[in-house]
Length: 382
Image (cartoon, rainbow, N blue to C red):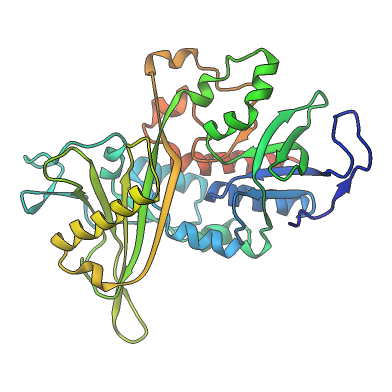
């Protein structure tokens, strides 16, 4: 594994690190493998250089792989409110609105949400996807910010413990014993994951009033399938809600058909993104495999033989993207800023009284707003 310049301490120091342990001192450390972490990592690498900035991921990801992953991403900017916020942050990036309003499937027909018919019971968070999506080019976003994914340097590093020392430096201990110290820690993973690696520090501090801001949220995992099909199934871009079951309240498969594209040989292709929210506590490969088979079976019934038209297929599982307050009445008592908190930059970044009161689903914009905060901060530093 390569982390750039190593500072090997050959004897035990005051911090208790033993001989032979790799200790890295970095100006900035970014943790996470989402679009927010990618943008923030590039921003700090541009400011301080790749030897002083490190992006830590739970798997090795190159810059182009980050871009490819986001192109498959389950969440577009959705709704006019988020679209306006996005345009304010990135005025040079074009947004393309889906051409048709979302419809739901019931009684063997597609129906509008604003009509007389009512859909099957919506699961928590599904109402977010009733908003019409807006798409944008990741390449155009990066170009507008003067960032290049070819400059992105990430390192495979599993964080096992986080603490903050008396000198103000953050210390991250990896699963292999490697230690990284930094004055600037940006955390792009979930708050629950942060608590799991920082709970010893929080417990030893004797100040656990920050815990509700880390664990006071109910997380909803998401399973997503990304298909490229070699035939046009829908002539216009549109979102459809397909019931997982006609007899049980299992929620929906939320299907986004992108605008068809002409290929060089004159044929057309279409991108289809299908996602479902996972409400079960126990999730394993067998469970997810059954869900994927159910996706194809249900969609084949409504869009005949769509499964046979797939020429490219990817599957993603996100366990920490969406979250909801467990108890809204206790929100006034939640401490959202605390010395034991790093700078959150992921989808759960700006969770606060304000963000939840302004928008029920702030998560995709949280990453862009957090990036903007760091953009302004670094711009102010000469």
